[in-house]
Length: 229
Image 1: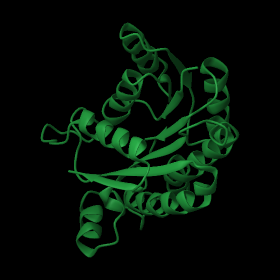
Image 2 (image 1 turned 90 degrees about the vertical axis):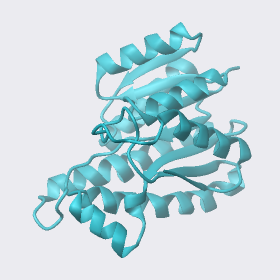
Image 3 (image 1 turned 180 degrees about the vertical axis):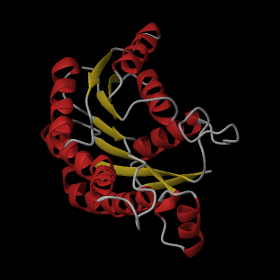
C-alpha cells in the first residue's frame, strides 16, 4: 500500500516542492490549503506525473478545520504516514500595536492548528512504518539579537515568535514521540525561497533544495534539524 503525506499549507515554493519530491518517491499526496483553485492545479500537476493526489480545502489556522483536513485526507488516500506543515500566518508584524486577533491568528496557523492536525494524525502515525512529522521553519525564530533586529526591521515580529515556538515544539514532540518510532524534524530556512510569497526577485534558495533537505532528514531519521540558506 502506498504511503500518504499531508502537505499542510500548500502553495508555490516549499510546499509544492515537498509534494513533488515525496510524490516522486512513491507517496500519495494530500494537498491542504485555503485556495481550491491552487489545490486543483497542484493535484492535476501531480497526477500528470503519475502521483496519486487529493485536494483538501481547509483553513489550517482553525483547529477544527485542521482536524477535519486530516480526516478528509485519510478518507481519500488512506492512513497518514507523514504530516508536513508549512502553513503560517504573517500577521501581527508589530507586536506593540497588533490586536489580539492578529496575534492569535499567527499562533493558530503555526502552533494550535498544527497540534490539532498532529493529534488527529497520531493514531495513523503510531501504526505506520517510517512515520514522520516534518516542519518548515525559519531563522527568525532563533534567539539572537541580530536576528531579533531583522524581525523588527522586516515587520515580522509575530512570525518570529511563532517560529521560535515551533523550534521548541519540534524538540518536545521529538522526545515525546520517539518511543512510538515517529520521527519529528524541521528544516530551518535562512533566507527567501524562489517562487514563494517572500520572493521579491532576489531570493536565492531553491524550493527543490529545501524539499531535498526534508527527504534527507526523513530517510536518515537522526538529527531533527537541518539548515539551508
